[in-house]
Length: 386
Image 1 (cartoon, one colour):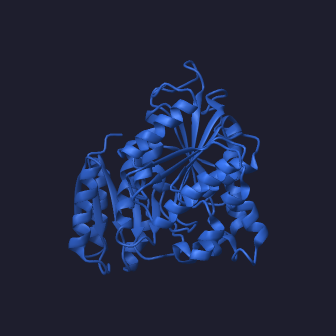
Image 2 (cartoon, one colour):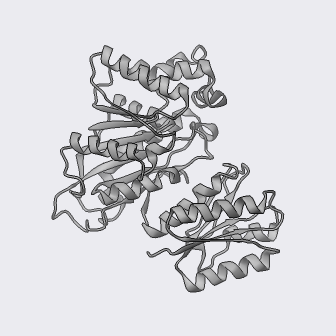
Image 3 (tube, rainbow, N blue to C red):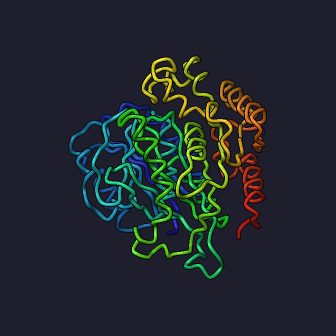
C-alpha cells in the first residue's frame, strides 16, 4: 500500500509537552519519507472526526495518543474504516488494552516511544505482514513477510530470517522493533519471520524460552497453519538464520545451543546481552537479568547455566556477533569477551564491530547493518537479492 503521510492525534489531558511531540512527529515522518501531521484534539468528537476523515481518504497511517479521557479511550476498541491503519500509543505503562479490528496498542516507552509507534504505523501499511498464531496467548504469534515477487516456489525455496526483538525481556518492548529489518530482509529475498513471544515480566522465564523454541519449530508447519497460503517448499529450512537484537541476541544463541526440529544454520547476535552472570553482577538494565530469569545467579544457578551464552559454549552452530562501537560499554565488553571465549572453546564466530549505537545494528540504512548482511549472505552462499 502506498503511504504518503502519518497523522498523530493527541487526546485531551495528555501529560506531554505538545511541541516536543510535534517536533518528534515531523522528524520521524521525514525519516520514513512521508508527511507528518500532529493535532491536539479538544475532545472525543474531534478525535473521532479526524479518524473518520483518515478512513475516508486513505493513504495515511494514524497514531492515537488517547490520554486519560474515557470517551477517547473508548475509541481504542471502536470499529471504523480507520481502525486497521491505527496504532494506539500510551507513553506510560499500562496493562494490555483491547483494540478494534486491525489496530494495535503499544505502551510504556515514554515520549521516545512515539517514534516507534510512528514507524510501526507506517511499516505495517507500507509492507503488510501475515500474522500467524503459534499458540493461544495473544503474544504467541509471528509475522511473515515475503519478497514481493515470491508467489510460489518456481525460483527455488527462500532462506529464512527469524527475528527476535530485544528490550531487556520486558513487555513494553515488542516485535515492532524489528519491523524495518523484516521489510529489508524481505526485499533482500528472505522470508522474514518476526517473532513475538511472552516476556518473563508477565509470564515467567519458562514461557519465554518455550515460545521462542516453538516459534522456530512452527516454521515447518506454516503450510498447514495457513491453509496452504504458505506453500510446501517455499521456505528453505536448511538455511535459517536467527537474528536477535539486545536481549534477543541471548535468545538467539540459546535457540542455537538448544537445537530443535528446525536447525539454526546461523545465529546472528546484534548487540546481544551475551554474559548473563556478569550482567547480573553489574545490574545492567536496572536489574533486568535477575528480573527476567527469576533470581540472581546464586539463587537460580540452573537457569543461568541453561540460558547464559557464556555458559553454553561451545554452541556448536555458526555464529556472527555484531556490535556497535558507540553502544553501552558493558555490552561492548560482553560481546568482545564472548567472542574471545568462543574462540578459546574451539569455535570460530564471525566478529563485526563498527561505528554505531545500540539501534544502528537494526537500522537498514546503517553501514553496520549492510556489513552484517554481506557476511550473512556470504555464509548462506547467497547472491544478494536472490
